[in-house]
Image (tube, rainbow, N blue to C red; front, side, top):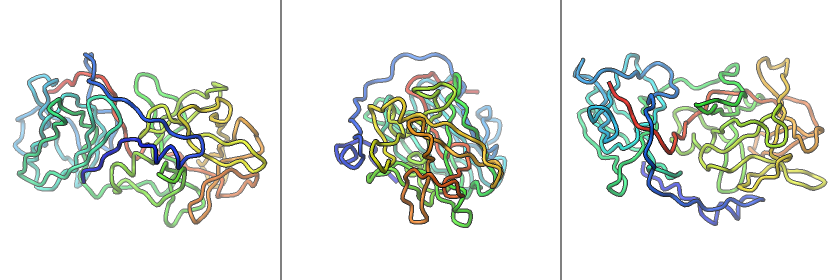
Length: 309
């Protein structure tokens, strides 16, 4: 799949607060960085050439010009940040899906590299940043929470929010062209859909004891409530600090779920319906409880020199 991720005026119109367009530039010089940021252990980094059955990412920024990975389980996924990438060689016996983006910005593509195939991931002759390798089908969260709402340090914490009321067909909070919805998305969905359903946990904009949720797909865009007698939920690139702050409280049933209370009005908790509409509610039921999962997709960073083995 080859999908443009440019943020347009259409998305700004679709959200109550409006999303602004972003400008991209060449990535600046970077420092050394370990390429793996998350994964399920199915795909691991290996020294290139130790076995002929590997995935090889060719990168101008990698030591030796390449980074290699092996598939050690039947399937797997790994979030990486391999800057300066221009090609992927798949010497496995199964297809590999590769997600990559512009050197600096929020435009993402996804392509499948078949066994024995070589594909370019170069963008405008300036390289790209490979952000994910996946061999499907991989396991998707269906039970207790697999992540936590704790802001990260050098590596950001990326989470997805799965509604506790939709246990049969899990619905996940996501940003869409029509605003904020809950949708049936899992780890085998398309990369850009999964990225829309992933959020970076930051200290609360108005209260650092709470958190704010920045869209992983759209840098600088935060989940917030809107004013009014019947508050709703939107995303904004110019968020109100209090409206974009959420205080998590543990929920005893279902276990490991949390309720996200609006700092703007603590009567209201983030909620969804079986039809997928997202709002806030004063009701303390399963539809206002959320499982916090490890992010369904990771955006990569705008800087970083790849190190390879």
